[in-house]
Length: 390
Image 1 (cartoon, helix red, strand yellow):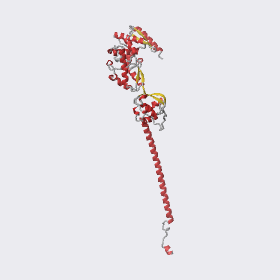
Image 2 (cartoon, helix red, strand yellow):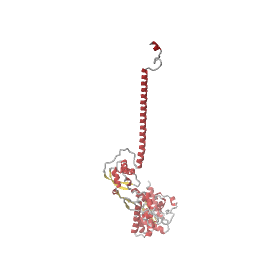
Image 3 (cartoon, helix red, strand yellow):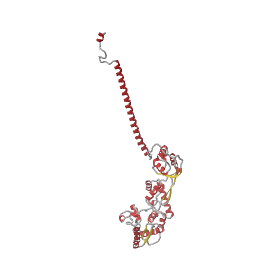
Image 4 (cartoon, one colour):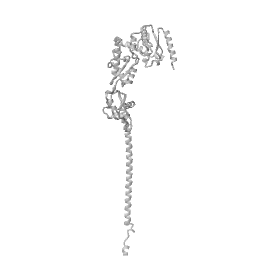
């Protein structure tokens, strides 16, 4: 037995693990592998969370950018998805004007300002949802207050809600001033009015006007119906001028001359009595071959106000410099009213050559036959100006 044991080497002596140690080693390796798997899972979950966060952040940025983009496209703002809207059907009344080229957002802002809808975003949402919304026409609309946004879109699509506007053109305005007046009340842009005026045939401008619309836009109150255009608007005003000229028995070959003289009288005189005297004084000057020396004519040619003229302006060479040129200006300087036209047709007989307004508030005007007498009146004006300069 001892020889047997002496002839063999034990597993312990050979450095081999015993069955117990081998089992323990396997268990330790398994534990390590489990720990590694858990660590890998933790890292994977962490990476996944970070990826989700990055994607979510990118999504938020993209959403913000495109919501701002599409909000700007419709004219609205990037408010949150909760849209505040009235329940409707609304009450009371408001008039809102839709201008040519208005986006859904621009219309919405006007409706909010007028109290028709609750928010711009509510309207732009309803506008985008209605495939006919882009067919809303320029014009003035009578709507209810506190309407549901979708109902407001429907109401703007209903021509029955469009209302006529009134434009009052006062005497003595230039064509440019009249365009601005029309544009401020209607939806007709100034550029459209200028384009229409440049086409005499389209607006019925008589040949006697020589293509110049100045003086031919009669001052009156006009009803502007829904759908009115620059051409229809100016045509009505030119037609009214022709009507008044015919009603006063003026021969057609005298139309332009009468309008030129009447425009001067309109800008120079305040009362009808003064206008008839100014009309006579103009005839007296023309008859003597004198220069008219009317500030309003010079100012028109320079595009200035009559009160902004200087002595240096009198030296500028223009067809409207009545201090250098003899005779009438080439065309009217404003649109005269019927009183001024009648003053030209029926001037008060008298020897006057000069006139000057001595009180700019009341329009009191004094007339003179001699230059010395005129200088006295001018001194009276200068005194008034000095006393009222503050």
